[in-house]
Image (cartoon, rainbow, N blue to C red):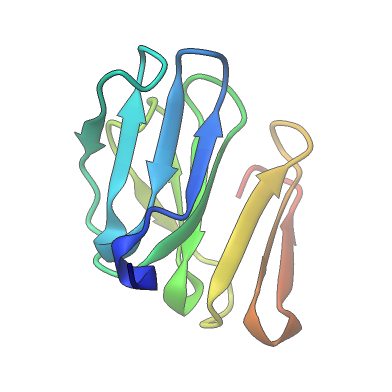
Length: 116
């Protein structure tokens, strides 16, 4: 299977609630521990490499061309944030509701202290 056919990261908030992001901007979620998966609407068409939620409603995803998107309603809607880079972002994570980092190609590392 090629990289573009793989959903590269799963993030579970608890044993039932989880999300995955992958190629062609696909974001899916489950509320029953992975028994069923639902596609989340998203305008992104590039690959997404990482997804992270700070709570049941607020989450972030990152990927190619410096893409970072945020949801504040559990993935129902996603909005683009200005990452300040066009590098491929491979990982996003938060230590609390406001402080987070994204890392990517060419040694790129960006940080937010105000939830994006």
